Amino acid sequence: MKKWIFIGLGAIVVILIVVVVVGVSKLGPLVKMAVNTYGPKITNTELRVDDVGISLFSAQAKLKKFFLGNPKGFKSPSAMKVGSIFVDVDQGSITKNPIIINRIEVVAPEITYEKQGNSDNFQSILNNVKSNVSQKGTAKKETAKEGPGKKLIINDFIVKKGKVNLAVAMAGGALGEQEIKTDLPDIHIKDIGKKKGGASGAEAAQEIFAVLYSQIKSPVVMGALKEQLKSVGGAPAKAAIDLLEGAGKGTDSVADKVKGIFKKKE
Image (cartoon, rainbow, N blue to C red; front, side, top):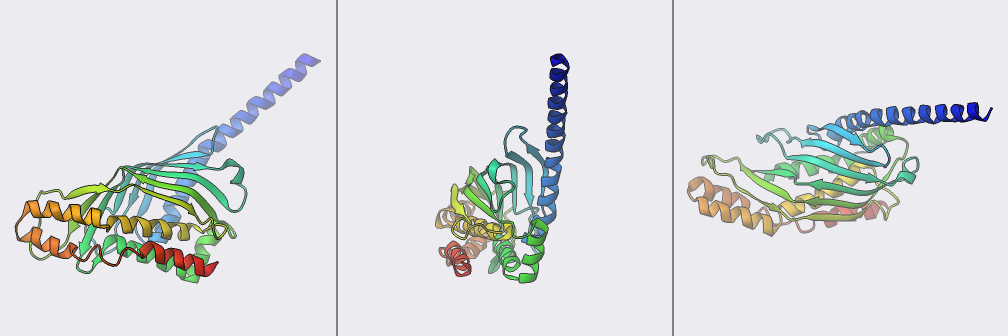
């Protein structure tokens, strides 16, 4: 009798393992579908991941080949490409509200900063995100599809080993095959959404893009790009420097303004 009981329990364990494995195997495509469906509605640009890997025994995910396209009117093929993004979720919070994300780590992003007159691609993307947060109709659609009132808290959001490529549209000519590129200072944002008890996906994206944009337009990055342009020389390079001259102005408070918006809502 005991033998049959043990066999029965063993069969149940095997069945449970199969269910878990099949469930996890289906979870990756679901996450991929969610990112590829709702991401573009936040940025108003092409946004996709090619694949999502989910760890069987932990709440960890790896988003592979992340692609962020440019808004209409910009010529560069992409705004940002990342080989891998690592996400570590608090397992105990998955069925709760807010969901706690322990860590998101973006490794070696390739960023293309495209400047056109008084505008640039990341300013346009940030404006799109802000618009989708502030417009009640759009925000309601996004939160309704995520689930009623579902919020996020991100303890640590990290960007490291990034590169910024310069693309400039101008009438004075092109820079030819010369590549203008510099390092992006590492970024570490803590406690996204924590003060207000959780942020929507769009609100979290707004804070992240604001900080990213501030770093792209920081004196360190803009200064390095201008120095490379000076070494290239010629009329096109001078025209590009002139376009970048005001790029670092007025960005110190971008992230602060975003945080100010969140504080008003609290």
